[in-house]
Image (tube, each protein chain N blue to C red):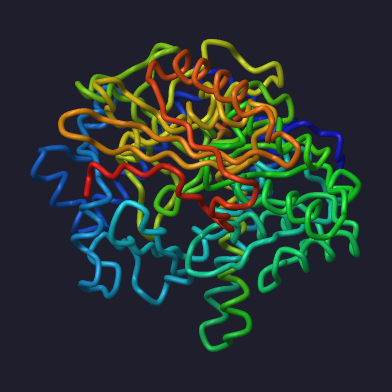
Length: 443
Length: 59
């Protein structure tokens, strides 16, 4: 096998746009027909909207297909066929994988996958890993305790599939994981940005180990937007002396997007396997043009057990105007997933995205990696408090750091903040997804 | 890259797998291993067979 080949699939990833559109339309018709014929839940939804498979002839027709929201999947689960409910399209004995969502936005949703779906999950991850330079010579360390969540399971299977050696670093603490990376000379790893930064901090401060000397060459992130936030990516790359890549995926969707080796400031949508639409957050109008943010509606074009057809994912994205120099014809989403429609909240009448705060905090020298944002209300007035940590040795720079923070936050978010400084190590540490943004007005 | 030639071979493998599965009804080790092979073959269809007609190599 030629490991110099740039693309996992040299035909699909460079397919001319018009042919890619033809492929997407053909595949949408196929998955829609499959879902219509095999899921009682979807059949009812589509019949009520008066849409049948014969109606799907164009992308405009696709937009007539009703969207599915997470709350709808919550409503049908724990019913027959137990526990998935009647969105299941295959007999229960064909289900080989159970996963559930993390429950960040409410009651977890169960997800059934057949073995074919599981192969498909790994296949999608192969597109990601190959594009990010993973090759059979890599020894990939996964510092993550696999469980009922899908996180990194498919990455593990994909890394095996493309020939890497995979080291599962599950039931180990952070220090043991670092020692194992050192002992085995792992070359790559995958984790949340929070944990990547936390591991580097542990290595430096508790073990007197310089993470840049451990030999990790590439890191793939998931679960948080950090690897697409330039200042956070820079911190991770600097901490490990490694290339850091982002990807996007979700339990109900699959691994649908990835940053390639060119790190173009955005992620490719795997348009051979997924159909991504962007809708205006207020009007629902379809957004085709670059540079305009909206929320994502996505179809997994080949997932059969519990299909994902026009799923209202609520991820906030925008198309990039530029093609990627890597040569892939898959479109880029600029800056990756920029947040969730649920998280973007109005503060003092201004739309605030937590990712914008992270971009500022992680770009200020003298501050640690951890921070917290609290929004509350006094009377009718919204207030934002930002808690940050000073790194050892920066204690005498409080005034200048505070001035930089206030200035940059005003510029990037158009809002004023109260800044509270803490000694290094005082703010909470997280192992998986961090919960740094707390809106106390919702209580 | 000759997509038609590759896809022709994939179709042969799919036919072979279907036939092996039929023969494996009373042979769990055959039936279940072929079921896994079929899932892998599906990935070849998604990667290659689906684009045969789009690359002008459908004949």
